[in-house]
Length: 204
View 1 (cartoon, rainbow, N blue to C red):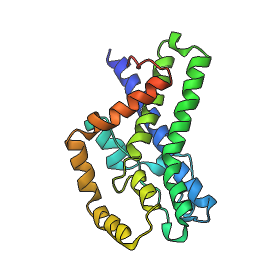
View 2: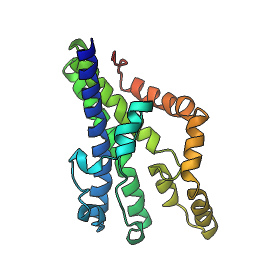
View 3: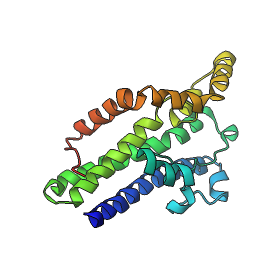
View 4: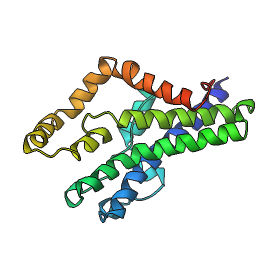
């Protein structure tokens, strides 16, 4: 039983790391495409998970609350146009959604529901990627959704208001989660997308 739990944990951690790595790589790749080599110079334009690991967010926090994050990819938004900044911010969630859809197609195509263990981990990978995408689309700084909103602001008043709010972004985000935002807002959206893909819940 203990051995099975260890194996499950190892595979779950691997899925988590791969999902986060793809998310951060997508940001770095899109920024590089538009002429910002900041992430590339810092060794972040890579699919090596080690480059994106945050000791607290990727290792410690998941052990405590089964959730976490990677080190944010450094991006010099000052050299990007608003349209480019929007695409860089959207690249991470878009990569996770694309991976979830691709895995869902493989799950149905190869009838993985009938394959013990393998099918459940594919479902778990899909679930992780959908959660990462939906969570990061929340328009609260420093999440990707807030950058996407900022890229569409035009008036000095709205830009200034964003910057004022951004100073307290982490506190707002913590408050959002403590007030049940994850269960009340994020999970229902995740469940809807999961259902639209025609997937059963993983049995892990």
